[in-house]
Length: 334
Image (tube, rainbow, N blue to C red; front, side, top):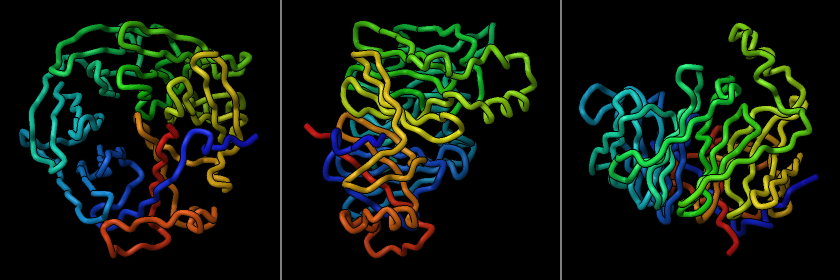
């Protein structure tokens, strides 16, 4: 059964970023009103800010050992037109402007792999688990003071693979937390948090079955598992609906979760503008105004979407080819 994205989004925009602005597979991508921000966290350790009109590209390499250099960027966020870079091994959150000039440093004394920022504060999530050091979700003020810590004792939270941000913005004051190897999700609001378990009829991967296996055997078991597994790439569709990617019978599917009704519906296909998107389409993020995903140029052309949406080439006049990637931005219906 297909899910029509036009039930939630309208008027898609498409961008092909070239040269220094080219999107790479390991980029974290963020959209603002006027820019797209690309953060290469591990390979080149650089940041690019690209104006959506194609007129400006600012790029800065951060690789090195200096006070404003890093060997890797653990997590990144964009909030109020500023870029936040979390450096876990230094326990510091560095803030830059859209010109990539340094603004300030926020010391945060905790360990985490994921970060989300909203009007309520800074939210850090450490997804890995061991019996002596449980997974933790921490709420911190905008200036770095710890407010609250939630711990997760479920043994499945150490299960590989651990990938993605695992934090989804819902409103300016609420977010959703999930984990690829857990069927439980938590909604964090300004004054309360609620959690519920998605009903997979007992067919979600149970980490207890493989906890004593060698890591390679664990990975082999996970990859061969025929039930539901690997909840990931969560994006906001509405204030009370979140769309995930997941695997079922070793094939890619999408799962729409109704947070109010605590129900979930599986979809084999996403449709946009009458065109079917690739089954493994990769959503890169969402915010209060829209969501975005990436497609290879060849896939974009095969989908037929170029006949309906003409992509903007950034910077203007940049060279594109079949290896180029197309970023598609979808604003929410109001």
